[in-house]
Length: 374
Image (tube, one colour):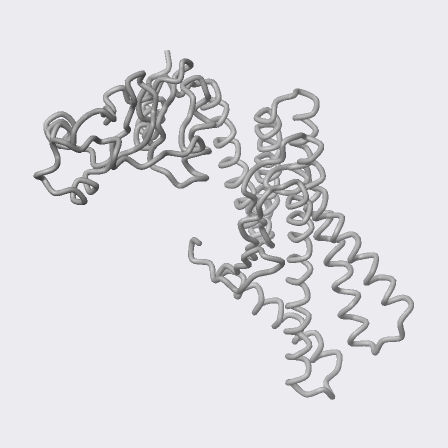
């Protein structure tokens, strides 16, 4: 997954870390080790290092708990969590699909900050009521305020942060349009990204100092991701308006189940030379199965004239088809979810219309992007 390293599974969810995670782990460990070594010089060097590493790992455990909060609520809604990844700026729970309603989307978004706030309250209570040695009390206090900061930062109202997803759900609830919610929250995220970048650049322009380097990095991260999300929402809105029938390939590899294998071989080679897989229809034009050229090898050529295609064709599931009046967005989702390169398209009367290829969808999108605006 884009260079990430799989660590294992958590509650059935694949867990990954990005290479940037190790950089932050090292920086955080070094920072806390240095601080502890200065506060407690009698400890030597090994104990501060171990405690610093433990603190760093617990910080990331807090981020992981935050993402698990999102994941558990999503799973209760029947949404598969594909993975959880820790990286430079925190964590990311990758969900199979969006929530069905704005209220469900709201609860998925708010779950992470609520977990962080709960951990802040729990750790603060432990620090206040349990007698701990000063170094351990400092670690617990640090973890508490890191969770508070994690919750408050993520509540900033702009995508890709949790606050942006909350804002998206609210706009979705008001307008009844999920795409409008995404676009609005993405624009807010872009604005916040520009503010963060400006806060890092202004000191450089006015005072000749580089300013806050992390603000620049964080602002760029927010800006890039918010822009990508806005583009994705715009694309989805466009795909939703286009019907499958507008992109279907009518010159598709369709053969009759009544053909003999000899006729099928002649037609597949002479009429559809580029295809290896064919859609099989009955006399009414209904899709009844699929046939491949490899299937011809099962029957000796001496029997091709007396054997029909229907005897070798494979059945096709209803989930592997799409109606011509459905949106192109629905088709793209099915292609991605089922990892298919094409879908048979069925008309209103149940007759096979043709084949929708993923490559044809990509070509159609490229033409839309390149078309001049008048």
